[in-house]
Image (tube, rainbow, N blue to C red):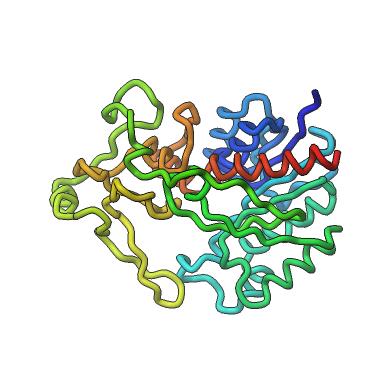
Length: 320
């Protein structure tokens, strides 16, 4: 039986690809310009080609020469130009897409999709990418790429087996209606069964260092309390260094997120943070410690990716 194929633009460490592979897709290619992230991708997808390159330099012709024409193109362009957590994002929503050099990567994603013309594409980002005139503008961008019908599928990861909150938009040429999980997973569910930090297995479970001064501040925090507040866009005050409440899903895991263990006076390990995103323990993260945390927080949670992939697999099976 022929397996449907995918390529992953802005692949990071491969959370999005992980869900698709688990659902039965063949991962052909990952592209990322972050050296540590693409090393992680290759370690987890040895069967795929891993390209350490800026997407601006990638063409459909190059991809077809390397792996042929994929059935599905997935990808997660950086969300910094569009998220309310960024205090430096541009005020005009259209400027975020056309003037911000990072925001322009969305246009390059659409360009590559237009050059490859896959049966299905899915682009993940924060819901802020739909603010103001951006929704209509993105319809025009993908219409120029050859896709007249565009769907803005807003999904919450915790409804699909991820033990942390995460609300994201998945822009696609088909509607995505994955089946929700039967119950919400909590922090307690996520951390269950892990050995003490520093054990030989699983990987990425080394204990992060904490200064005595910070340890005293941690000890005073109750479940749900944050050690610091930082300023986001439009003066919003956002929490970080939160002591997790074991009875609930974790807050949204970001690249900058660091969480405090619900029962112990310490920060979570990279592996514990990956558990909050639904990564299996055999998914490894390479690079420095901060790079590993970033790869976890910038990923699409694999359980949500798998739910989306199953919806697409059903669509492709009916329309093949």
